[in-house]
Length: 247
Length: 244
Image 1 (cartoon, rainbow over the protein chains, first blue to last red):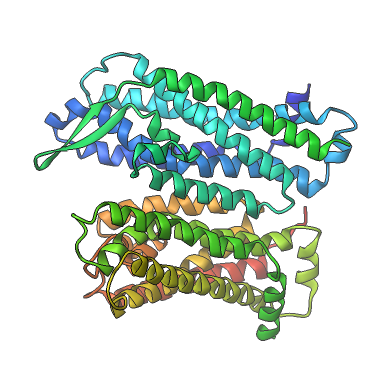
Image 2 (cartoon, each protein chain N blue to C red; image 1 turned 90 degrees about the vertical axis):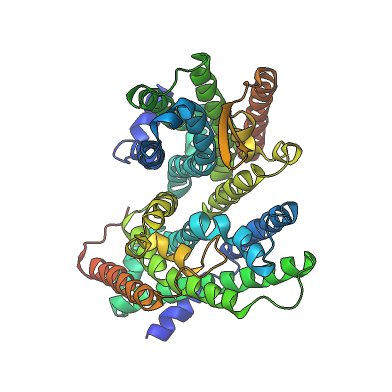
């Protein structure tokens, strides 16, 4: 019932266009660079794809999260609906349902990206993946990192009257995340927006005058710890929201 | 009347969060670009020019346009809220002045952002132990980047006026900037508004990209500026403004 209320609010707002638009630009970008690969380079097709998508995700996902969260939460701020809503449902329930309704757009993007990877690999005849789980881990890692960032964006978008602040955080975070990828790992670990590269399964290293792309083993243990922290982080955000907005 | 409009828009920006974006966002490329520069001193040997490549690497090509989009969205958001559209459209002010007023203020904030970036560049260079002052050429690149912002500012102002969402035009600016990479790589940067800043600021380059094509750059910039500002004013004049 509550979920359908969120769906009704999103009607005619073209929200699907946000992940679809971001995905289209991402695929155009990646497709363009993949089409220029020589046949002998296609052996490294998947590692190249994994590495370039890591960079692109660090740019796209935080801003997309900020846009989605702002678009869905701003309607409550503009309409001053929160107090009225909280007479009908608890702030915690509202927050969780709102989060889930934002999350589905993120999943559309991450699932679309993973599917596109598979299609690129098939159409361009890349050397087969060493393990099909690479795609699964890619999907899971970008979805979980994106979900944590989405949580921050949603909290800010609901707490701030002015949507400029969440967008500043989104842009600043993207900047930090992108830069942190070129820094030593210990610094990279400090920046949430840079976790796309921590869980990346593609890397590049110089070899003489060439660059070699290769697979990196997925840090499963680290990912499990991160996922557990993500759940705690969400509960903390929920708590903050409830404290601030309880009627 | 235009001057009054500019004054009003300036008044709206008093104590606004927009200044935090103006101050904080350029600090990130400054600190991280300098850090990156210091980490790769054995490869980056061109002094001030090398530092510039690191500082402008992501700023000009990816984040500059969304930053301007943020300014534009903020200015229109004030009108999208609380039935303010009705107020501004019924005010005894010529419609073009409303648009030019906002555009001037965006340009003004962008100008300050660029000055701040220049100052940060100088400070970071000094802290990194670079001798003397930055070459005048880099100041020219900063100025060209500021000019390029006028065209993108007009486009974003138009988008933020038509799209009644704060965040969507910012997303569009980011996508536009990324597509700009492809246009620049193909040598078509002049024909894509979001690439003009990368070209103008000579992002991630030590040698001047526009040394022989400055006149076409300025011409394209002027054309884009007139096109988007014209479209914005026309829309404001002709479209039936609905208040939600």
